Length: 239
Image (tube, rainbow, N blue to C red):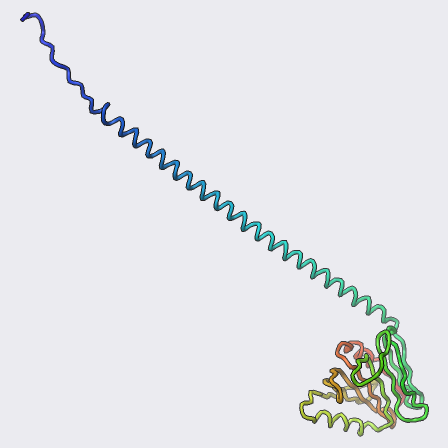
């Protein structure tokens, strides 16, 4: 062997890093990327689902609100129409007409809506009771079951006897009739409220003395309560 020749040591290549470690890093990176993609996909799917749900809820709520608004508008229109109709009906009553009864029966007078018709069934020209009926537009065939805005009777009978008849009705079984004392044109009067005796109608009756007779004013329905009360305030008669 040549003494000048340096022996060459066999080179050992460390392949640990290149053969083993690099693939593990690649696999880890790929796994992380996959996880990130999956998480982002799930998040995106969740967001889309939530967005769709919110849109459905919004559309449902909007439909409900629009429906409620439509109902409210319709109700408001109905209320306005009813109010205008009522106001028109009230205006049509003016100016009021004036009723005047027979002079020898105390000359009873009062104001009533001009839209009411009057039917005098008995004018008491030959004595007896005076009977007149009032109703909007027309007076239908008179019976105990027909409804009239006003029935006026001036009975040829003293107040105490007529009041006694209504008192008996008050005391009848199952009667819901009630009475209170009021004043009519400076005179004491009885006002009865409830089911009208001898009928199934619910209304009001007022009786008061005119000379030796008794005036009976009756409305057959609570629907005419306002007109009835207003009419009572205009009553005049010769005592």
